[in-house]
Length: 164
Image (cartoon, rainbow, N blue to C red; front, side):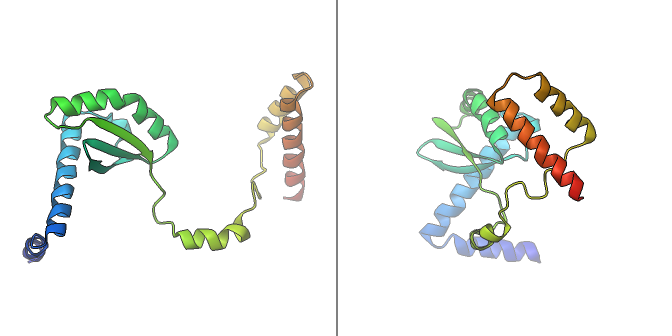
């Protein structure tokens, strides 16, 4: 029964040019996604960490889940493009964009930003081994910005552990 309702809904959507265009684009992206999966255009280790974005004027957008994935995809772009073209798609370019995190309401972020934004609040914890290793490193470094930064970090971590 549900599939009949969906089919009726899709037929109704095909009645307007705007909806038909949107449906056609969605089907095209689905086909591209299936092709990319079938031909192994992108390594399986990256599946689930990117999404297909819009296809416009021959340019396909890939939305990366984080900066690391975006970097990997950028390195793979020539190979991905070549494989897609060999499959018959007339895609001339691929652009990689960083995807915005989902399920975040921008209004919530703005209103809670000032109240909740305390850089490194309650995060100055360091294991004893980490503390000792950083202390040793700071002792062996020549006087420099790095040495002063490590010493400052160690002081903050030490004070935090005293209060816990």
